Amino acid sequence: MNHIAPGRNAGVYSYDDIDRRFVAERVEQFRAQVERRLSGELTEDEFKPLRLMNGLYLQLHAYMLRIAVPYGVLTARQLRKLAEIGRKYDKGYGHFTTRQNLQFNWIKLEDTPAILHELAEVDMHALQTSGNCVRNVTTDQFVGAARDEVVDGRVYAEILRQWTTLHPEFTFLPRKFKIAIMGSDADRAAIRVHDVGVFAKRNERGEVGFTFYVGGGLGRSPFIGKLIRDWVPEEDFVAYLEAILRVYNQYGRRDNIYKARIKILVHELGQEKFTQEVEEEFARLRGPKYRLAPEVVDEIRRRFGGPAYETLTDEPESFQAAKSANPDFARWVAVNVLAHKVPGYAAATISLKPAGGIPGDATSEQMELIADLADAHSFGELRVSHAQNLVLAHVRQDELFTLWTALEANGLGTPNAGLIGDIIACPGLDYCALANARSIPLAQAISARFADPARQQLIGELGIKISGCINACGHHHVGAIGILGVDKKGEEFYQITVGGDPTLTTAIGDILGPAVTADETVDAIEAIVEVYLSNRHDGERFIDTLKRVGHGPFKERVYAAH
Image (cartoon, rainbow, N blue to C red; front, side, top):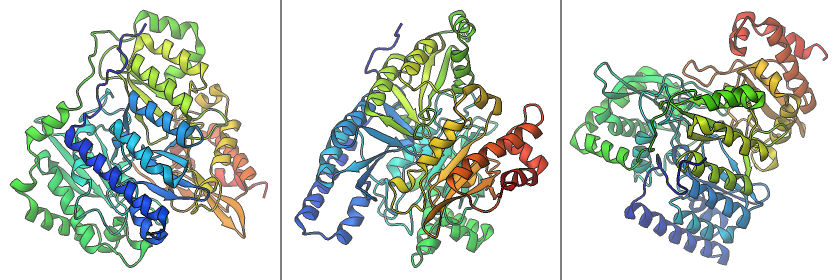
């Protein structure tokens, strides 16, 4: 039974006329730029910075359009529009990314203005999804719903979105800039591998404040963010970020693209000197002009609305009976369902990682189905996770079985969230001009090897992350098992790392040994899992077993045949 009227949204920021007018004007501006490029009035070199600021890339085979999904929150209506665009202008699917955005990989340049116009009709855009600016601010996919949440990060992510969009000083930074914010102790946003990671919390008086980590990032030179300040009051939230960005804008390298990120600046200046520079700039900025007033925060929070939750109890009899009667449903609940802050509700992860599937891809038909399910079961709202899955964040527990039945019937009921089959992978050499090796076929092969849901559950929490090049779009550095595609004399090989950790106890994985072929990589993952299972103690995670026994047993098993 559906308890939620279709089209009713809650938890999604409500645009006003100013927002809509701004986006519409930007669409028309880009339409004119595209016309000038098509007529030859603009060269590709002249057009490149203009298209990048509107999310349009030129990849191996076609243009790719990256669409912004601010902090990963969508309405069902918006998802239906994405499905329509995929069917009308692409090849009938889209790819959800680790920055909670969506990419279309087969776009024609002449269609781009029409696509942006259609996006604007549902309060969406592609602004600042590329370029040397502040990119999409990411947060926890369970924000506003998780039982362990202390601060709702959506509110502050939206403040950052408004503050950084076309900011005159931060539109042309030395390099791209990524911010993540997390509001619970369980870091689900990987904040310490971002240029700025923000940990939102409350003090003993219940006041909101923020811990700032700066200088994290992966890619060619992976770094873990350094603690710059443990407590910044809410009223100084914008001022402190402004200070960080001003220091970066002033001192960041512009002469070397490989040394332009803020992580290099923090490393070269040193944590103490960088902090001193930020504190001095912050002292100059702090005051009425940059004060984040409580009424502003309250207004932003109000414009998110709130789900009209019913008064329910946890674990209703019908829910328990469905789990008892159906082991497959019980397994999905155990793996893909998270406790909600409101009794009687749950947050359900919809895996976009079927056995042998392409991580993060969703067809237009699947997007439309998920939109319908969001209307029926989650107040017309859904989330994109940085693990390339979708989430219905407010599902009644007594409707979970109905939800799962619909997902299962359409190939979306895979119970692997956080398990070995929940692989993160970049598009790799199938699409990207920068890649050295393919990521997608390898992800499919590993996924097929570990297709058995019971076996995945036995193995437990174990994240595999694959990048097709050193830019690390697949976050391989922080995978419990990371895989990096490398080129060896024109052939694709893969370097394996182990021990990465994307949570607050962040760790960069260590290289296990020489790079191997794709087929050998799949066998190597099998060998690593076997060593883990034979050495783990009861309830021990992979990374904990690895720390206890060391790399030796894993390396010996993987390379024994060579």
